Image (cartoon, rainbow, N blue to C red; front, top):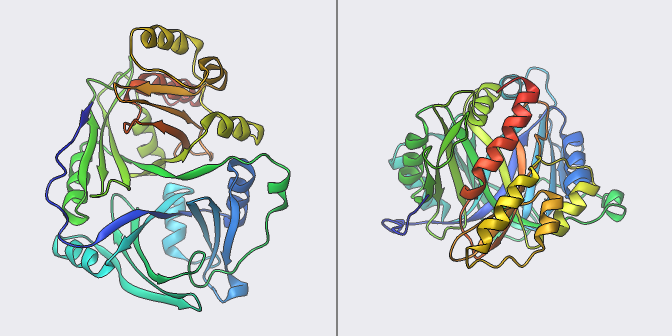
Length: 380
């Protein structure tokens, strides 16, 4: 594991603030939004569709604290862009939108450094003000939309209308997920380094953390990862690629079923992972299985370290929550099973206690858990 302390030169201009929202293209936006509300504890945020004057696309936005997901489906049977995208990739993340300041400067630099501009700066407005946006192409068919909210005070975006509170939120236990911790982009072979360089050059990001296949491997598979982040280190995007192994890795499986590079999982941060996971399980979310031997080994390792885990390890073991630690602190994490039929997208729940890593100590346990599921699918 390598942590990069040299952030490189400070960005010339512009500022990335946070993940603004995640847009997913799906076959049925209404049903997908309802799934994330009932299973993951989101609440309806806004709707844009035929009734609001949107003739081509239905958009359902859901929110949980600072996390916003937007699900979109096309009304038009001949919408080539979305139909081709869905046929190739299945339901998945189309756009990782980022909140920014000084969008003009950010886009100017991206243009000068060769970024592909999908849509140049445009404005949308309503009674709450004006939002400026621009969209660039990143890896595969994934996009980044820059969202400048400097002059906007609305709940989400112009064109979206408020929707009633979902009555299911009064019945099911609250999950209390707080913000998007990171989004992971899986790459085909030998594409990790070029993608990392794209973030360095086009978005003025820097390398935050990395591991290679000498550290992350099982008997069957391995991966390499570089985490890219903005200057303030509030937007983290791990870039993963497979490494040679005896059998098909989870990265290879993703790339084959997704049809190229794309977002493999979204990590959602919580301040109380035990309560969150208990309530997610009560809502029907399924998580990867971790054998008890992992916790037996963990207890032995912790005895010889100075790390003190506040949470009850017996409860963490019961819930199958993973623990990674270093001399500064620790993190707790758990991974859902795939949230759709293709083995492509899943959700991570993470809690940090003075630990900025990405669970390198858990990768073997995670890989082995994923390989169990891959074997069930006949894809290992």
